[in-house]
Length: 168
Image 1: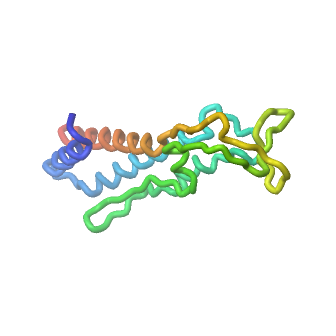
Image 2: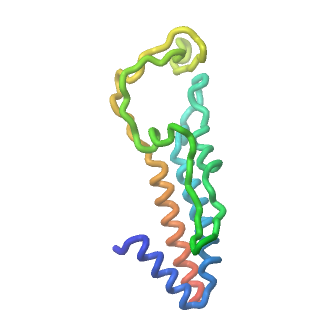
Image 3: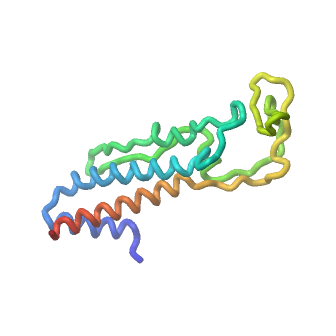
């Protein structure tokens, strides 16, 4: 199987041979592909699916929202390049994406609600609990890689479609 880069070069050559406006097509296709990447990364970022947002001050959905806020889906054109960006500026995104070691440590203000059994964060509250006693490693969710995969698939499919349109 040929690499992603060689497939894209082949499609772009075919578009050039057809006399098409390649920079315009690439800008349009990249925008759609980046939107697909943002959507995929967002869907894979917790809390997702049927995950509950219960537990006071513990889950906000901010991490998922930042894929859309921080990514640049509108292409910038300059210097012979067309650029879009899949990004998330939340400081802990790499830990969720790549996974992380979980050392046993004390978290002040974290409590288990006796009524619901849910973890709750009580900023400024007394007490706390020790975490990391049962889980030595938290697996990564690889949201960024899934987004890149969605980008490549969308780009490949759309460029193939544009090339085929030129033969009609």
